[in-house]
Every structure is written in C-alpha cells, then in structure tokens.
Image 1: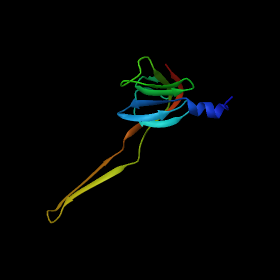
Image 2: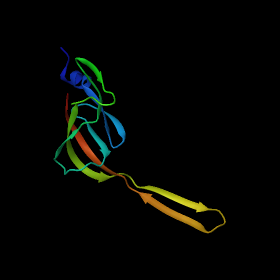
Image 3: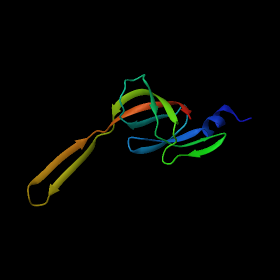
Image 4: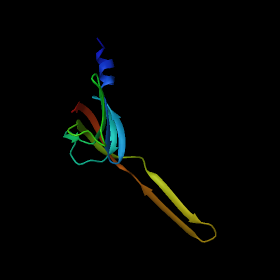
Length: 113
C-alpha cells in the first residue's frame, strides 16, 4: 500500500489554460493567466491533455473528452512590473513602457474523467 503522499503524486494531469500547459495534482496551488470568477468560486478546466493515475496513462488527441480538473480560485493579482526602454542614438528619441500581467491563483481540488 502506498502512502497518501506518494499516491497523491501519482495522480496528475497536464492541462492547458491561457495558452500555457501545467502539470497539476490535487492540492497544488499555482498562478495561471487571469480567468473569470471571484475568489472562492469553483471552476472547471476542461483542456485536459493527459491524465496519469494508478490505472495508467491516458493521452488525448489533443484533449481527453469528458475529462476535467476542478479548481478553486484563491486570489487575483498582478505580476511583477516589466519595464521596456527604447531609444535611438543621436536622435533625441526615448520611450518608456511598462506592463503588469494579471493572473489568478488557483488550488486544484480534483482530477475527473
């Protein structure tokens, strides 16, 4: 019999959200591109590309039909400020731009299929 901690790490999924892919397990907390909803809401992420559990590995083409990951929104926020400075030498041309990427912090509740 595997310990609860070991069993938890065996069950994972590869999901796609916000144009990026993440490896998630139940209990994980991660920052993803901002999604709609208020903190405390439960959302379903259905872009599941792969699932691995004690029964084996299932790979989608490109996604697994009917598979979903349930997550709870913990918070919304903005990332670190990125500053861009452009200039042209000997032309008196200088421009500053900055950007803060919005994100959502979520906790993975379960992987279902």
